[in-house]
Length: 87
Image: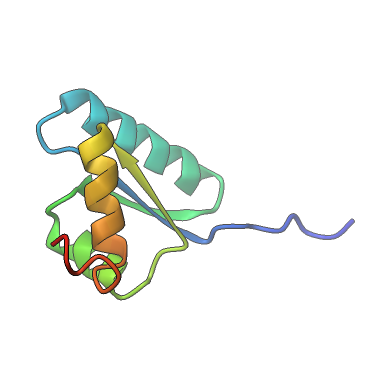
């Protein structure tokens, strides 16, 4: 039987810095992914290490927890060139 294909190898899980529940959920999501062999980093939107990784396209998937504004900021972080007029 062939090995199971991983669709994502590196995942960033970012949380809204003012929502404790989002941070707790982000930690749980990252732990789950890591336990299944998928490298994941977890932190807040303003974390420089995560921001740099996203900017350098080091992640296959970005999961944002915290609400609509968090999602919008994730999109802007991911592709600042395309959304330059918004940032």
